[in-house]
Length: 207
Image (cartoon, rainbow, N blue to C red; front, side, top):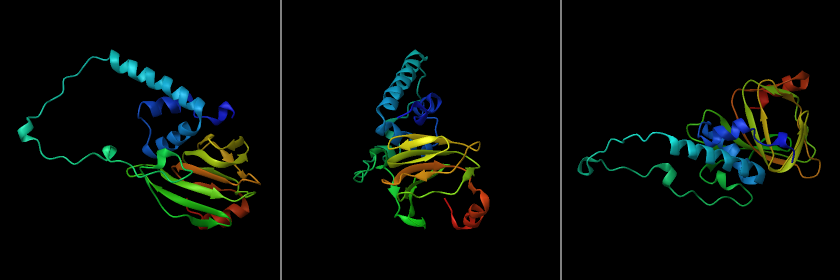
């Protein structure tokens, strides 16, 4: 796996500090789970965050009398997640997954419900040899490849790789001719297909 196909130091540092939108954080979590080197790098950033907390001045917390405390429900983070589906990263287990729905010939999408996320999160599955239309984005698109592979102008991306694109990127993804590809995506903005074929497809595709 090439270093350019891993999350950047900036992205991992923001993830360690809890500064990412939850949808983007989920895609990074899946990547870290699948890639040992990014997992080790993340541990380094977490150690730095911990040292910064240890060095910070303590702040007194305002206590509430126990007899006046209102009953509280368990926060969502405490509720045990459902078992992960076979073959999927454990990071997906707390989230509801929709059914697979076709969005093209041998292309299907599955929504991932991430409450409160500013990004749209979904899984995308494409059959072997599929070539997607040339396109660009008006926002961010972060992708972790779960299985199979694809390639475009910036290289080949296989299982565990992380693809971070923004409005400056234009690409024409081509799916592995043998294994196909399944990936986890979080994106903001819109996909803008280019060329005459892309303009014909634009009204039909809603990611």
